[in-house]
Image 1 (tube, rainbow, N blue to C red):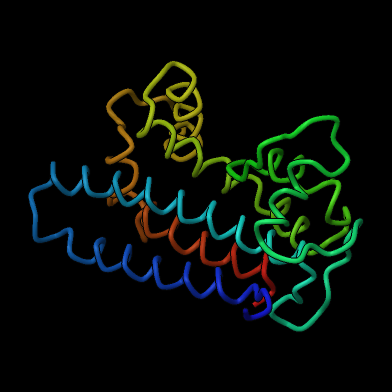
Image 2 (cartoon, one colour):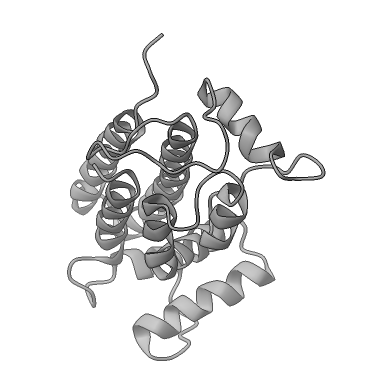
Length: 203
């Protein structure tokens, strides 16, 4: 079995981002309503892929795998032997009971990794430095996926940030593809995800 390598989730994420970008490039060939729908589907898939990539990097670091630049992670415990045992380490080490790993917010990432990765670890520092875009992408994703009161409130904050006011006519699809922003917000989110995963893995 090959040794855990942070390049594996990073490169897989780049491939998935490439497919998302291909969908975005082809949106002009369909109707505006379908464009918005497809943009929302891409956003949901992108953020789920992003969480999977972040998780993949963190699990491999817990196994003692070096970063992409060759530097070694500073662990607070013995290195796990596999990614499955790394997941168990994150869920149980230093805890009174099992706590499910969560990767959708920087606060969740810090809570998940705090007993395994040193607080000054580059992975955690990169996540913290990108807390605003991660939170924003989660808010957009959740508004699409759930459309409940909490998700609508969080999404409204994103709209105010970019439009300067709460605009009821701005749906996630409208925000993602609006010509008001160049490149579009969806293209920006894809680029941001690439950069964050790159920085977290030092690839």
